[in-house]
Image (cartoon, rainbow, N blue to C red; front, side, top):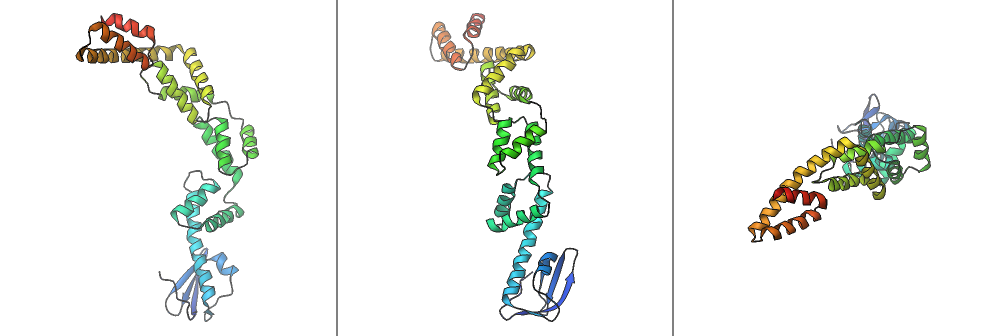
Length: 275
């Protein structure tokens, strides 16, 4: 719908109220729909009144604000968690709003009680904890989003969340890929680092978890034996094909497998079985 030209003013023909908006119709057939709040807060408008350029410009700006606010409400009702900062960034990116427009729209929702910082912080902590993130990472991420460290820390304590380290370590080890136990442990530690653990802490927890879980250790060992056997055969044959004698091929194969983090004793055992 085209915006009415205000170069010579526009005369109001009629007002059509809606549930939360008012449609202002002009004698030339054009119209503007504004929020009920914008209509009530602005100058008195009635049929027969001629609106000047400044008034129509303000009404058009109010019309744009309606679309921005509606988009904000759609984000909040999407089921995803959005911080104030993310909401402002989203409106600037998708709706091309200025920082001031986006920030004022968010503040309006805060004033109306639609956005509540405490609710956001509480829900974010619970969701992040369920994903296995460390307390340090959760508090750090909230701080980056503009929430003071004091409030989130108090919420974390008040929620009485259990230490989720063991669950996070278990999940990291199960999802880690690798040809041997050392590689799997290293990849699991990296997964924990992404959840906010220091690398030293991650290595320590993974090592302790594998050492204390005999069933897991047996499964990883069996997987490693299969990988070692296949890789030994492949590498050995490659060196033989290049012209190395069996003794040279055996030594080079062992060196290559050591570089791939296989244990020396396991390599020697495989070499003996291969002869």
